[in-house]
Length: 142
Image (cartoon, rainbow, N blue to C red; front, side, top):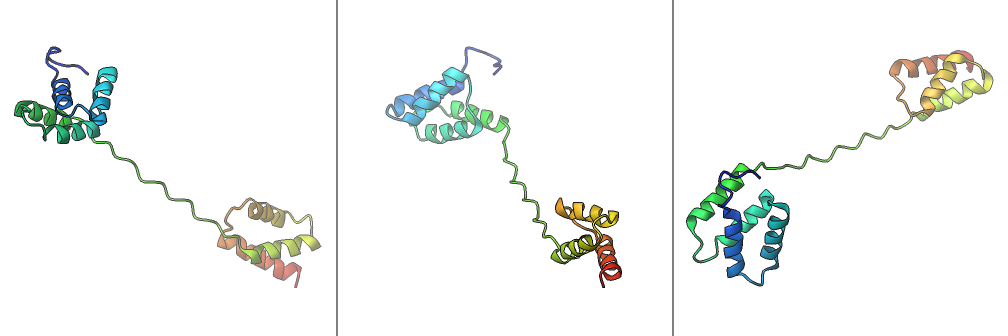
């Protein structure tokens, strides 16, 4: 974090004043440790620190206002919504039955072999392909 005046550290001052007011607070201790180790806090942590520091008697209002400004300056991160699952493709059993009946009688029929491979791979058969299967079934089987 680049500061205009490195000798002035408002967040550290607020952390120390809040630590003096709440010496047994593990939350403030962890925030102070993280601030010293990593050099910064997240927006949510700063908001929680502000809520806790606002309750401290004797906290300078200028420091709280500066903390509010730092919070407003930080970007708000949003989680993207979970992606929707792909719709489950339901195989047309009638087309599968027709394909198998045709291949039993004519095992080398290239068009039906192509449609069978498409059907077995889970690809959706178009209405024209379904019509073609029914037409071939009607011509070759019935």
